[in-house]
Image (cartoon, rainbow, N blue to C red):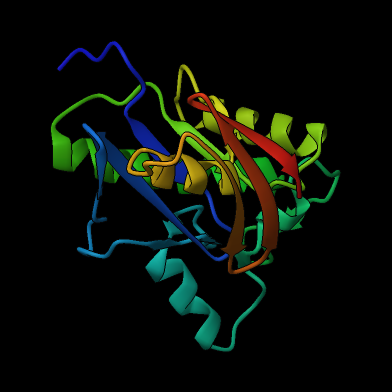
Length: 199
């Protein structure tokens, strides 16, 4: 199917991530290869260079071994921090690890829909600064997305609600209880436009 709009949305989370497809005014969460709605934001790199992403990567944390699993790398997006995987000696930047999670979501969605996904909206915390947003866009490019507009997480929630709201003019307080971040944002809606007042 050739799309003229960006209908896929990704929540690239600190602890878990997910991809959804917009269908009219409703969304469908695309289940991963394990038939789960969410994919853990975890990457494990074996000694032979094989990558595990998601649930299987997160499971390796439970076993005592060298430091070969990275989690919560979203917190360091846009920084100079380098993750070292002890067994292989390989190193990865936070955006490279985020790219692996995005690749997994993309591959799962492509398998379920039968489409080649070239674009997706990616949500970011309201408090993300420019360098963190730039790193997120770089991760999307590394994952093979041609286009990846960013949307603040609370704004995404307000938009999803706003599709169904009757109010023409209102202020909303949106709470985002994330696994690694908590955002509270005041949203103003007026004449079909949604604005972030403060966060």
